Length: 557
Image 1 (cartoon, rainbow, N blue to C red):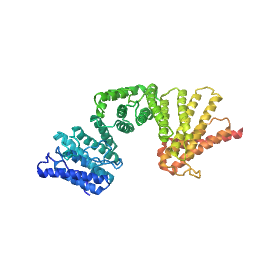
Image 2: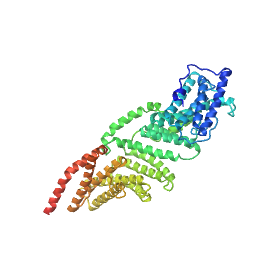
Image 3: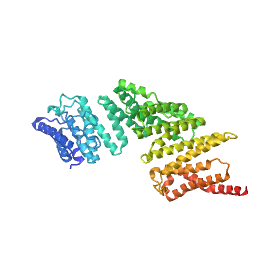
Image 4: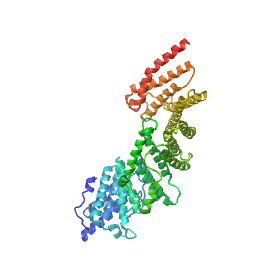
């Protein structure tokens, strides 16, 4: 068939109106070809549909910038994706819903996975619209109306809807081509235009805005993410319901979690550095001063009262990273509020995967809040809360059907016990003479961490209970971290029995040696655990000497 270059041709140098009987006949014939093409595509006769739509474009090409033909020409080029739901084609110059129609060449090409051809059609339509608005700008007269296909005279807003759908389809094309920045830009523009022209369905709009916020979160663009989420809540409120969509609640929780986590990841020392707070506050003041200029670059939703309503929601939370416990706690409480509401909806009976993800997010909120807490006892209690909400999930889930989820939870529980043990050891180190109760508590936490790390590692074994010689890339780092922490845990067991301590050191050495040996056989694994590998090599060198001293001491006694 003809390529994109045959259809997405350069724009005409001037406006040519279809005057005279020959031109009028060509335009009317183009309308007929358009509808024949739509009907063929809707009945899966793609080749015939392409043939008729190509004829339509060629008949209109000379007049496509005229006010009579531009809307039809754009519709003939407009595109979508085969993944969109198939629906009955409605013979209107604009679909009633953004996701509603597949009546154009772009869809035909995308169904054939000719995405670049579809891209050319849409970009041509976008350029045509831009030129028309710049050079003509008058209200187009829809050719279909003259054929009595429309019940009433169309308005300018309906013409704008045609272009809005064009932007929507272009966003889909860019996403398919993995041009995510451009896809987000066009998605944002689509949502903005839907509000401007009052052509949206509140629930769909809110879900799309909340989904877009996740892109901004991943790009660490928290201001834009906050704006999308605030707008989603305001628009959903138009449905008459009290609270936001469950999707929006879930994303809000993710948003608050991520903004706290940003600071957590930036500080590599593992503890909150109080000496850096003044420096960070000065940096944040600069960010606040630049906020106004940053906002001008962002695509803002709504005008007038709608804009004010969105701003009121935004003002409830700062998009800047927290610097101390109080600021982090404020974000934590907001995130937890949406988590609680999401939990009410995503019950484990019926929403197993969603429920688990909400619980994991709740646990993560406590984890990052604990980072800002300076009181070690209170930090322990936060990790204990995490364990209390995660452990019941391991009982309810069948590992045969939820293997990956079980692994995630087992690893997270193990890490929570691991952190608690480290905190209890630090507390004990401050005491001159730790009592037996503290020692027992440390050993119990150690035992629990070992239990869950071992459950995680055992889940990697084959049906014959043999540990894999080659660990899959998706679990390589967590498996190596589990081995490293198991080695460290055995070395941290407190015992007065020299023989038992020697056994623990031997087990610890075995796990450290596994890491070193595995990385020698599989060099690509080394880059996944660079720090842990260096420490393992050091311990493989030091532990045999320490163990030999123990043996000598035991022989003398």
